[in-house]
Image (cartoon, rainbow, N blue to C red; front, side, top):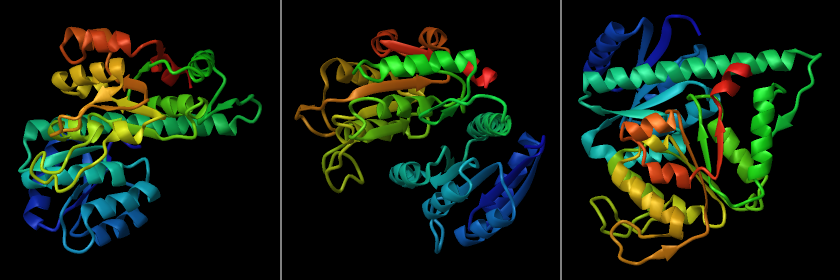
Length: 327
């Protein structure tokens, strides 16, 4: 990754392309290409590797979700951002689930929000590139002993401590709280714990709390009943139901609304929940793993994380900050 970012804008409206391009050029050093459709976007990505791709959701022909889904397979380390109209909020979940969208922007966008999202995307991209380089260096060092634990490769003291925690935590049903910078492998660790546990034959369900609109987050976790809100045309299972007898991983827990954190706390304590729009209490058997890129105690002090939720979720706790530097 060079100091100058390679960015691709995909939107069928030329005016949107021009406005977004001008704003981005003022924010960060970058080379910005444009495409007017998902098909053109895929062709551009075949000829060039982009750090960030921003795509409109609704376009003639190939939709933004279809385009970014294909891109997630061909260029998984490219940061994918969705551009949506306010009326399309319910479709963001589809993009998050199917295309592994990292974040989203609403049209018309707010420049402050745009600057924040792009700034975070730059950090994430740098972390992914650095991680890729470090892993390549490890693979090429033939003289070094390599130990693989469910997706991790390396033998540093920091990694050995993580392996130890994973191996101790996996057989139990205890909650786990993972901290560390973006891109260091928190979801890999959560998946490893699941795959080494007695729950490995059931679902591992992962949600990125930072990528899902706050107004849809409760439905995504607990599900909803038909008519619960505009666009709820049928009953829908949430992640809690999908993860029954398996593991539920909530990444970036500190980005979740505090009111919903209170419901998550009760869910962990009792195993019960209510779908949005329903008065019926449902019960599941779910192992809970959470993660944040914030320092937990600072997040609690700043009002981003409930103290009781943090301590309830940290029967096992692992920090990946030192691991990222040691790999």
